[in-house]
Amino acid sequence: MPQLDPSSYASQIVWLIITFVIFYLVMARVALPRVSEVLETRQDRIAYDLETATTLKVEAESVLAEYEASMAKAHADAQSMLAQAAQERSAEAARCQEELSAKIAAQLGDAERRIDEARQAAMANIGEIAGDVALSATAKLIGVEPGDAALKTALKAASEGSV
Image (tube, rainbow, N blue to C red; front, side, top):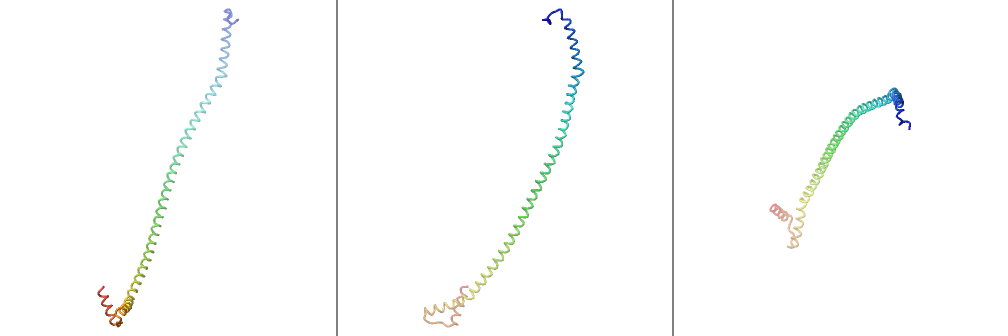
């Protein structure tokens, strides 16, 4: 193998240095600036993306805070409306209860008045009915019909004694 021949080492080293310098210059002048440019562009893009993400995060947090505030306000408004509706229904129920109580009280008063009238009518007729019953009972028991004056006197005495 010619590479291992010690007499050609000097020429091989010279050619190695020449190719190394050429490759080094090509890499330093062409390839590395392009790679450096790509890395720098990538770094700039990453920095821009991070900055944009930070800005968007701040905006999202402010939007979230506004949303939460509006939700809290809506919740408070809903609670207020529910409380107001419940209060209105309670007032309406109380008003209906009062109307019903007044109506029932009026009907009860009317019924009591009719009962009193019926009782008074019955009490007024009880004297006549008692007189008729007493006449008929006396006539059956004794066989004699007492006069109206004796009957009225006996009924008056009986009613005063029982009252």
